[in-house]
Image 1 (cartoon, rainbow, N blue to C red):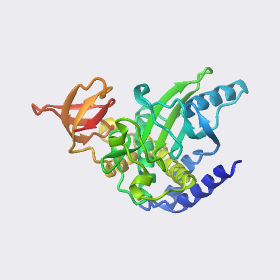
Image 2: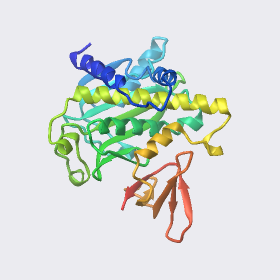
Image 3: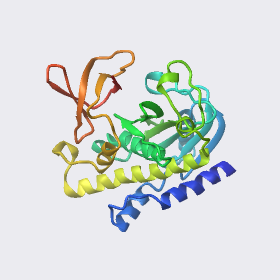
Image 4: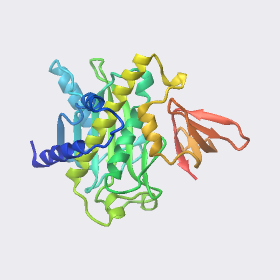
Length: 302
């Protein structure tokens, strides 16, 4: 194990010890942490990769060839990425100084809870940034903004292995110590170092992120357990525990937005974001007063 991974694990434990979700009974906290325990159980660290998700897919296929499944929560970290991309194959700028990682999680949640997976990951990432004293906010679904600029981005996708197993692959990029951004990113992006006017410890940030991921993903699994026990779901109006926490950190409601499935290339309409429905849909009010709810796609703040 490299010294960098050892440092990450030490910081992860420090942040786990000081998590502050004290609205739950101690036994419930331990159950939630147990659900999320696989996060970071296996970590690979590279100086450079093309894409972390490609490496994860290779690990999944290698595990199958050996007659096993890839360990849940396997994380691949890289100091720089050479072919990184986000939604719709947009370039994901990933130079030295940031946190660039991907994690694999088995597709074991029921569909009505799988829909909250991007919210859980966004919640974890936002909470990690806020640990540094910044007023980070979530833009639907999971962009992390600080002072109106994007500090972190998340890509969630699902794949099926050659052997038929399904996984969620989660890509996370956090601008840590990088300070320059190309093209239009110069005006739209920021970093922890820019906001804090100091260099940060990347091992500490990575450990903090893994601790928050363990909590948020564990909370999602606990949420499913509770909903099944009660025989309720979001379509009946049940409020997800993950979505409830997510909404407390989001600034989307009340914003005037432009919406589209690929909003940069094909914006569809402008509206005012009015609420997030119990299933995570964005309820928007059009100019004529009509309301529309979208469960996928993306928005730009106007």
